[in-house]
Image 1: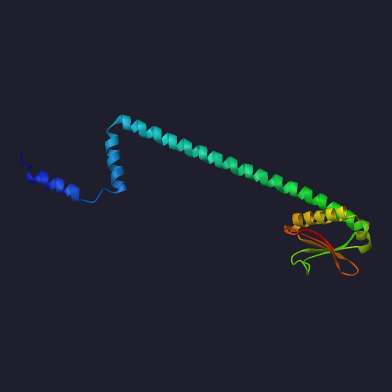
Image 2: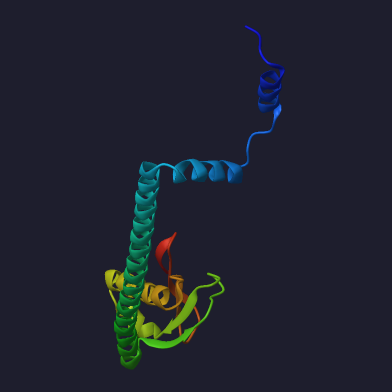
Length: 173
């Protein structure tokens, strides 16, 4: 059997030509599909499912965003409530005469809050109570500024009485 030259030339050109572009492939599928009602139905169903999945994803994203906004608002309210309680306790310590002044960073602990206390009043506390007070002040500082470092200084002499840092913990002098 001999091949006709035109058939041979057509098969050669088909083998050597560049593959069809994505646009050409879509057009060929559209043309072939338009003639077949079953294909049109399958494509319509697939398009509907894709649209439904997209709508479900959009709804889920909106619900997640709303939940995150509610969670942030709740966390902010809780943080504000805790800070108000801490500030109330700080005011009580100030009115009782324990805390005389609160400043920024300390020389011995850069970035630490300098809290000046009445030396004789501080000396009257037990060691456990002193540790609890310094930890409380650290919690207040952390809630207020995000930095838990605290240095307690004698308001008369300026001598460091205690300090707290997240790595070294409580240090009583």
